[in-house]
Amino acid sequence: MTWSLGSIIGLLIAGIILGVIGRALAPGDQKIPFWLTIVAGIVGALIGNLVATWVGVRYTGGFDWWRHIFQVIAAVLAVMVAAAVYPKARTSA
Image (cartoon, rainbow, N blue to C red; front, side, top):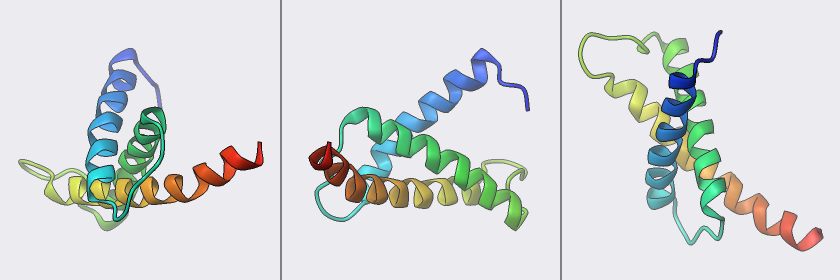
């Protein structure tokens, strides 16, 4: 896979959007910095695309609802994992 500047910028934008959505939908209070929210969103975007490919719904006619649902679910999980790991990493350093 070749990464162009446009695809990197698109991934960053998707990471911001999915990270914010994932953080809003995750239960509890996430005490993580904004950069980690973006990283969780990027992870959610990549994992959501992978799951959508496995299920066979990554490329559909029209709006890819299932792909975006998988991305949001993965972003919520990534935010939850980041929130669980980040405070422990900060206190042990």
